[in-house]
Image (cartoon, rainbow, N blue to C red; front, side):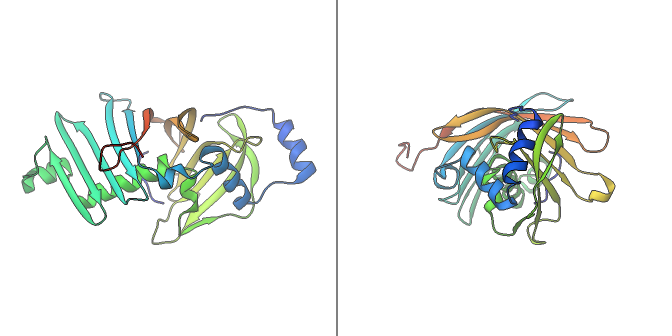
Length: 252
């Protein structure tokens, strides 16, 4: 999966993992991924239920921005709205149809589309961005995803973790990802990606706290850093997570 810029972390002494690994061996990549999904989404809520997320996005320079997204994987629907440079940008995807709004109106000039990067192509990228990152680790089941067979016991940001390397079909993306899991609970605690691992480029993301709706448990706060030099890029916080509503206005 290719992404641009842009743990909860239960800490247990590594000796606990060492004892478990010595007695039973490390899980395979597939086993670790399945165990983590069982922690975060044991009943498949992410892929079967319409969800509404409100996210506060802060960066070192500039004001915080609140973004609202609606994700309905089963219904092939996605909605997005945010305020940028004093304008309200919004869009919706429903199957192959696409609708864009600027300050509540659909009559958008070509100049305005260019100025605000408000196009259907851009909206599809936004959909893929939010559904991928907020849908982890469940998105590791997607077609074109290749999990390494070997899991490695290592350290990530001062935490003892199990590391799983993930690559993708060329049509999906060329980045190399490493996902980090708590060695006892299998909860996702962070990840990093490289465009070119030999250059140590790309970024890493730490996860903290939990937002839940029913049995679905998503990491609540993501902080972004460069791999090279560790420079801080920003934080995304899931302010609210709710079930969406069907066409009648009722919660499913």
